[in-house]
Image (cartoon, rainbow, N blue to C red; front, side, top):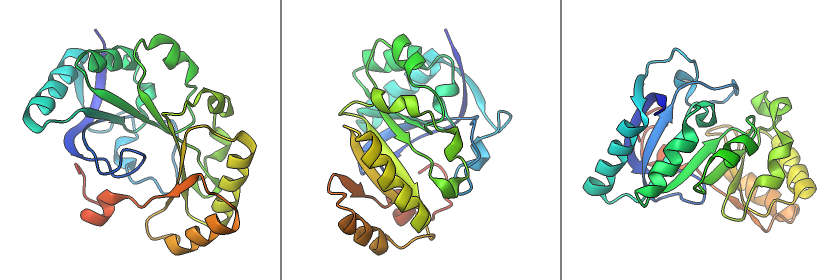
Length: 224
């Protein structure tokens, strides 16, 4: 049985992606291979960040309690970067056996193929493409694009006009079959300007999304 480095767990609504507004159990793991300029969970990115070592069974018991106590049917695995947790396929298969839908929020800098080959269940993937303002675009695994399925999500976090231009280029080049979201870095770019950009560039399949948890609670609040 695997061991996980758990930063926190809590029940709240999904703040972004195609499951925005839906109750979920969040399992946040420590450790990330990127350092994005605008990261809002930098506190969880270091391997030695405050954490609890948890077994697969402990996390499955946590999920079972969340299902019984709050009626959740969705689990969001986030970080940090959850795909760095070696036992993730085992955990996803266990969550599937409990009748729970699993979503993995990944930063786009970890190959998806090894995980998908080991995982018997079929969790939803929400993958970022890091744009220029993040400082991490050169770390993106472009071979991940063909692996994204209709049920998955591709997310572009935008801070500048250059970011928007680059997002449009990537969408045009790779033509993802999954849902595509454009999300503003909180306080860095006007959502209204992003709408005009979408109109001008014929991005009819993309969706603009604001982070719900930062509108409901303080942008710096944890555990929500």
